[in-house]
Image (cartoon, rainbow, N blue to C red):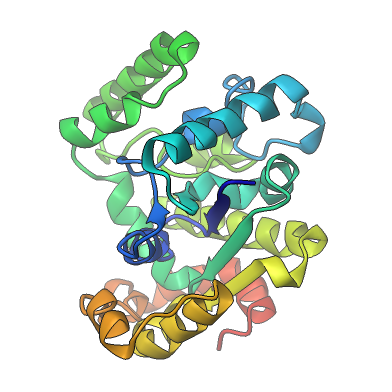
Length: 285
């Protein structure tokens, strides 16, 4: 194969943007000039109610289309590595693996309590036209009207909402439609992280460990140079210490433990109730 797909897997607000931006600053690593390409990944499954798309819905036509979109970027950039991070892929890792069994997978986990803090802010985010137009450029042409309509409805609902929250933001897990109606934003965001983290744990088993590089967000931001040395070794690169220092110069650990500042004791208790079983599996205190 002329290039290697590099798929970053992690829940929303877990550091996937940080990783992508650092990695694609290295020569030979390229990505799309927009944040995520979920409509491409959902090609042929745009009407599926969640992002937890099962492998049974993957057809040869869908696989060919998605692989062609990666190849098109390779042909344009001639880069050895084509990097992609769409957070919804954390809910369908097995589906992604069946499209790209040869890919390198970078999995990043972050404390779900801090993810919840950050995700709640995104649910209330203001409209960014430039950001949205960039994403629309990569919507499959046949699906363009569908996504424009969906986007418009979501924004209209935000305007009419007392909470001023988006109708949906981030990975669509099973049960999110009911949670949006019946649960608080804290519970929705905590459940969103929980579903993403649990699906990654469950679905990574068929991927060879030789093709997976694991990062823990908290350790990465506190030890970025050492973590990028691991990255360099994994991809057999020759990055100098000076190169690495420059790559991670903007990394900060100031958001670690943010939930302790943002939530009161009652909210933290509820957060612990939702996230603790998964946090234990990921070896978080």
